[in-house]
Image (cartoon, rainbow over all chains, first blue to last red; front, side):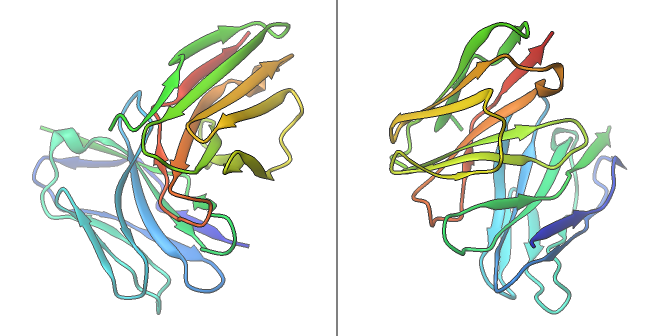
Length: 113
Length: 113
């Protein structure tokens, strides 16, 4: 079956530091890949997506590249802000039949001033 | 993001109560979803509706009863819940059942006493 593995958190960084959150996946076929973000007390917001190999998704300074050879979709940001503190979820959709998302467990990011 | 709204945002209920969660999407989508988010566990898909027909039910106990009267509204009726059902319940929608991008509401934080 499908699965998504994310690095354990929390990830603690100082403001303006470089961020990497690792995500690897197992899926049949060619899934679409997503990063969602959940701010405290809120639901999930779509951060970025990529639908095929070598695609790069980007939004709000965050980027992730779909790497089929390593089955990875690592999230990066060059300079984090305190307002980026949230839980980040990697997810995949295998595009077979009805759309269902498989989520990782989430990685909490804490950014201090 | 106000495309998907959920009410109430917080709910406390006893094990013998009956309550309902409501979700409404304003995006013109045709598919809607219920997820359960428990602490330290991946998001769990509960139900999927496409064009008001239930297309997936992931072995959810019968004390959870979904209802989709039209493509904009989704309900989750609750009765005789257990304390372990306490969680954040998230609603999502997508363009159609085969569309892989889902948009989430803010969730209902449910506490079962």
